Image (cartoon, rainbow, N blue to C red; front, side):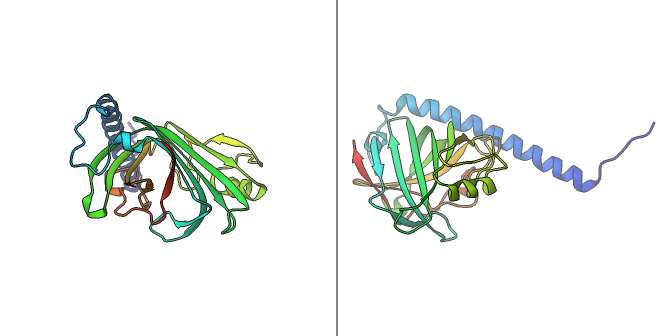
Length: 225
């Protein structure tokens, strides 16, 4: 009987993939169960000693003018407009990138939404709490021919064109990993009065080890409650 052995490097690669798959499965179960339990008690939880609670987040926050802000640890400046909507258990976020510092030449809009849960406070960072957010919906919209060209290069070989919106949840797309590899972010949220800021993005926010260690310098401002 002939037995074909896989090269050691290939076996190690497959074992690493299986370990990551099992880890993601455990994280998925943990996040989903935590969000379900968290949403059931969000309105009844004791919030004493916390910088803010879910009810303080409820409302809409938006960019004032055009934000020229570093979203990630690499310090690269993005020209964006941001919109955040929160209720007691769910969120939606819209980021529109622009080619210019005045935000007059739109490129593309990244929209994501789903349930969230607030976690431990981080007093060393200010009025900040850890958070987990799940990507139930993830879409990208090409806002111009230039934006469509960026998406064709960074989001697969789809025939992107101006005003086209696609579900990019299953696929890698610019800063977003495929849903099979990442169901959400381990985040930081700062809420200081009517000022809201998420964490400075790390290379991998799909696991607790990748949670940001600082919040972004430019906040969004509350528009409605």
